[in-house]
Image (tube, rainbow, N blue to C red):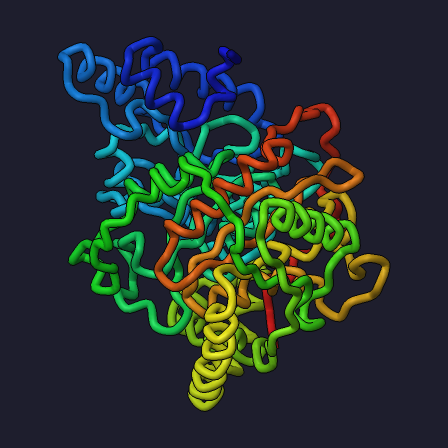
Length: 493
């Protein structure tokens, strides 16, 4: 059995700390040493928790006093830098909040700490979490541990790179249009966008996150760990008026128990009816996953369901959110805001009330088309992203699979296409390209049924353990970020 703590899952660390076969201090010291060795290149962790070792000592004292072990006892976790952490700087990747230190935790961090987890540090994010490349003027650019000259994705790229690079076994991200699933795909991880309200969200400026909701969720190297964290994170809280009531679902059990997939009906869509440009290698790996599911007894039906109006839905709903959140900041601080964020705010200013209302009508029609598809199938599968992670030492690509594209960022629309429905969705590893880059399979589940989604992912993972591995990081290969590289931000019209 491998004794390298950095390779251990969160579940294994919790078990060993709980049994006192390893101390929480030893675990945290090991992770801090890994951060010191690897993070100067990856730039995944942007702020360490100075109290991490003291918190580890408190865990050890608690167990020495014969207290019952908690679900995440002594597990180091990383937290995206747009999630509030009491006493730990939280910048949102913005010069506007560069020195901000919250006085309270987000509910999700509260719950992790109450379950015994130790916040190791904060992870890098693009400004206000609005790009699919993780870079900002406060901390710089995060690199991908599978190839340090490629993007870690965004906007939870710091968490993804930290977990894939074994700086922590698990972490928290946020997801609006794919910000958990995209970096999970790019870094070979499991990441879930829960149903809105599953993880109570506070503090936030918008208690009712009108239209498409931002959600918080876990990212890890195993399905089991994602289920374990979601079990801790889920549940209602009156501070979030949108939080869901307790449904008595056991997410940890669902993720830890693979099942029989025979006769499970699955809808496969590679490019959402031509909406999303997809690299041939990505398509081949997703089709390979579909064949693997058929071998497990699933019925996989390729579908070309109607996604018409999706670009207009995203433009209207996203525009509403951008204006709501950033108009005042734009007026006061535009001179220190990043160009990818400015591009999105300025595009959103074209989304008048009529455009927002039309987007909502179109979204309702679209929802009923997706709902009808899920009445005939238990799950929908697509590529999590249409291409592998792009290079940072070269200009942003303008082609996918050798074909020129008008907007390269359309490769991310498979994720956004299901954010607008509120359905739970996750990315799970489904193989590697010829260059050794990970590719994620997006699985979309029934409404409010993350437990079914996790059990499906656990069954797929049990059948294909070869997809779940960690990279050997070549720190010496890092090249400077190309001056010609330009990240435009996700602008959809």
